[in-house]
Image (tube, rainbow, N blue to C red; front, top):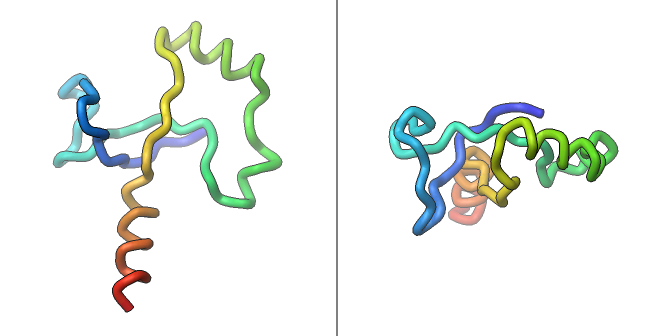
Length: 75
């Protein structure tokens, strides 16, 4: 688990206290990095976290990964 800055998806409503300069401070429980695969949470752990937080998990795009992709794509 950790915290990332994510780009706000269109139509998504986020409390202002979770925003930082147009980005969202997002608690992440898993990433698309290969090293994270073995440390992914079980469904039971996700269910328990969902009850604790009071919201279902959602897909978000990590802003650092997106910026890296854009930089590498340009050249």
